[in-house]
Structure formats: C-alpha cells, structure tokens
Image 1 (cartoon, rainbow, N blue to C red):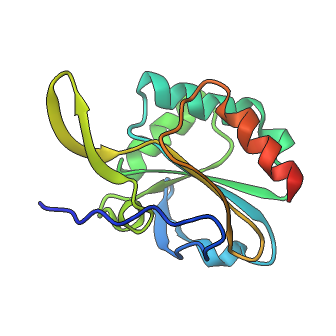
Image 2: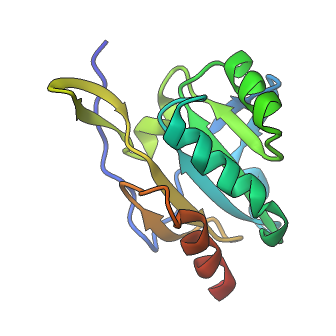
Image 3: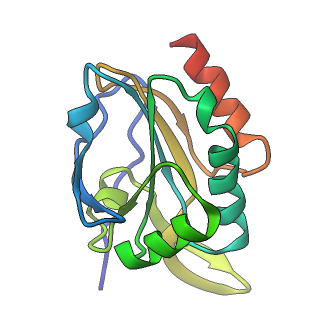
Length: 159
C-alpha cells in the first residue's frame, strides 16, 4: 500500500479537521472542540512500546495540569489495542485509532523511517497544540520523549 506523505502543517495555519474513532468506537471530530478547549494532538508509533508508554504515562502523570485542554493520542493501532493500553496504564485521555491512515497523512507524520538498517513507513512522533479557534499554535516535529510534556505545558500557559 503506497501512502502519499503530506507536509506537516505550519504554525499559524488552521488545524486540519478530522473525524476518527476512539478506543471505544466513538467518533471524535477535531472541530467539536473549537470554541471550547485547546487540544494537544500527539502522534506516536505504537501502543505498549517503551517510548510510547513513557510518553503516555508522562501525559497521565501531569493530566490535572492540562486545564481547558483535550489530550488526544493518535496511532494506527486498533481500538481494541488502545483499550488494552489505556487499561494497563490507567490513561485518562482519548486515544484515536487511525487504521486507515487518514489523520496521520493529513498531519504529515506518516513518513519513511529507518531502524536497524531497514527502511519502512511509520509515524514520526509529533505533537500539535491547537487553540480554541482551531489554529495550530505550536508544532513539535520529531519529538524526544524526555521532558516533552513540560514543553507542551509551557506553550499552553502562554495561550
């Protein structure tokens, strides 16, 4: 299956809207938060892997600091796998299942990656902070997990 890679949207642009299902099979539409909450939209490669677990648990451990903010984690894992991930680590936020790659393509995070000499397509860990007007206030491409949640909280304080 060939995937076309789109560019990562730029800060100041309108956040690409999407509709996708969460861990419970409920439809989540990004535009439904407009006028109500800021959104932290973070893309991660795979449930239950070390870096992704650390990132999710960092968001979990600081969850109460995210006032007026919706946290949405996105990967191409199935809703069932998301449910297991949430259950195992007691995650208090929504995980989006993007099995058809529509959301990862809209945000340009489905890219060629290299690991152990192999080249493959996958999610490049990235975070987008979207304000209540639906505008991308901050883009974190190629996120390093350590300290990332603190960077996100610092940006949200400025909004």
